[in-house]
Length: 284
Image (tube, rainbow, N blue to C red; front, side, top):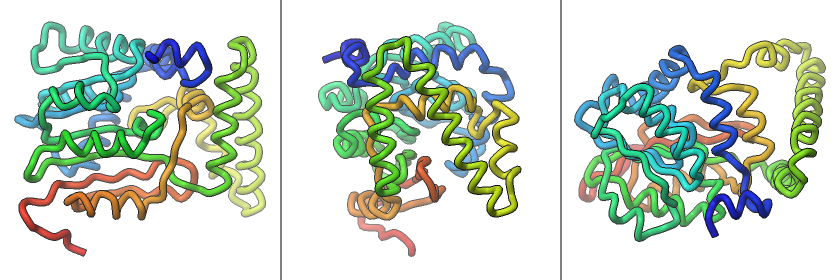
């Protein structure tokens, strides 16, 4: 089954359609934010001379950021509209550039990914948990990391127990609704969520902690609050995992964490891990 068929059947959220709308607000400031987030998490100033694989490239923003930092970039996505978004950014900023390739493909298709070769940086932010087979996707992403000392950078939704399971049902309902009902459903869920957060922080006498983010569309990494909200409510399939389990999984496969950002709520845990050279052990 392809992405378009799964989207029509309510089995998958139309990520590409949402990314297409995001491109209307993409500007130089957001691109610089994306570049800076890569520099910060990877601990580099440049990616010159390095091969960068963007798994589930979405809008193409981070492929663009990596290319601007000097990397040779290969981008792919399962969703054809997402592929079109990345191709559009390549057309805008790097036309006819042979150092950036964009294709349609699935991280679950081992035949496809094996032909890509190996990469110095394998990047997949907020994607592998939307494949429907998260652990297979993680394992396949690991397989593309160059040895020795290649880097894996992934972000996976944090496991919050019953809350995560409740959101699974919210996302399922969104995708099974008729298209005309999805926007009001998303608006209602978003309003209720914001209200509960405002009440929570008001009780703590810190209402602006919840209110301030609502006053701007700008988010970290160059993202948009408006389109992130749609992605969050609709993003399906949906899986999640505790940070510690992901860390142990990567260490068991010969990786050492070099950077991390733990999320204390329902957002993404970010892990940057380097493939250890030979029998080198990770420093505690």
